[in-house]
Length: 592
Image 1 (cartoon, rainbow, N blue to C red):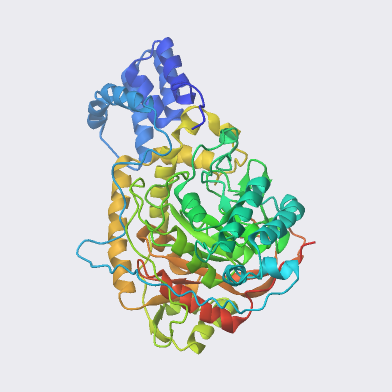
Image 2 (image 1 turned 45 degrees about the vertical axis):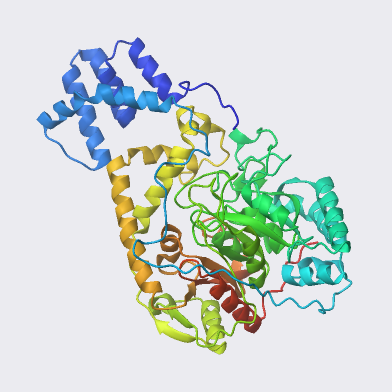
């Protein structure tokens, strides 16, 4: 962890020290810390009039308006009497060092009590045909899905070194305009590729990912490479001493690390301290976030696959923007050890690829229990690439398709052509705005030092929706409200379980009916896949037109599948069938 200065030297500490020097009581200072500007005004009036009781009463009343509560004057005076003890406790709490990898004692588990969940393990069949003919063209090889590259490597038609060199040359040419790589480990990648080729020549294959080059989101540690979390305050962190769990598992599976893909600062958006990561189908817009670099580079044909993370859309959103296939697994399926924590009860790790089957290859390699991740679950993963999807019960909420994009309708029609049985499901209403408060509370706790030490000024993105302001705003949500949000989350978990119990999978637009928020908070997996292309204007991170030029660009558009907890294999297999019918997965961006 980067040493960002001694504890107690931030803005809150300066306010406390200044107040004490001017003779204000500890009650004054606590009121200041709790209610900000209103407290500062109250302390000023104490100095001017000497009327401490009235000034503090006004400050407490202002705090009530911010917190949404109302007390009588007598109650207000009584609560002020206990602030000194709370101040002492909070001051001591803030002075305790809390590194990012220190998880809370309370751990989220997506499984409901009393519900039996099967361990979906066993043999896996990725349906890889080693007789599949390989093109001699470097671009054809680069854009091929990972499962096809795996077949070529296993047959000896392709070497890991050749594939790695193809990607490194493309990265050198295209990464600067895309701003999708933070660091490229060229020498390390070539050495790993040579070692994997030697292994294969000796008959020692590590599995389907053997020799495939990939990119790792700059949120995970990889030995010898720096991890910056995309944020300027952490941009000088030293190289990591060890691999994160996901990097270690991919290394053991034979994958070759090309380098670190860019990450929206502190896992939000596509702005990082070095620039803005671009959509390869339209360089006039960002790639969305926060797995911005992973989606951009994968869509641009700069790697076989990549690793992203999602707290609330950071795999789905950039995949939607760039047209990649992104799989957000069940919460707890993939270890987060060695990765930045943003929200301990929501963070998930998953693959970003160019085909549905690729996501199964990668998930198989990175899945597994890790006793050093408090949120890790012990669940197997098996995949049958020849599973017949006919007869699968696929649910949808008719409301999602009332004004749906024609491409979402086309994806649903393709599922119908594959022989699934559709089931109308009324999905629960999602209290999205309330749930998101809990995410920001955890994130503000994880990065409290930025606020208290006034380091948030170093963040590049400073708009109202950016982290610096959000971390400050969320301090006015009470701990009581945070617990109440968690209780509502538990109720939603039961409602979502009831809905998923009726079907094998759900299909719909990526962001339909609050499903992105709901399934992130309740833990069910989501797979987003390319449904087609449309002409549209360049847009901002939040989907609004970026300018008034009216110019349009041909860009990809994704749709989604969801599954019950631990049932990722079903939606991957169904997505394969939809992909085969839509015939749009292999279109490439026209980069030069």
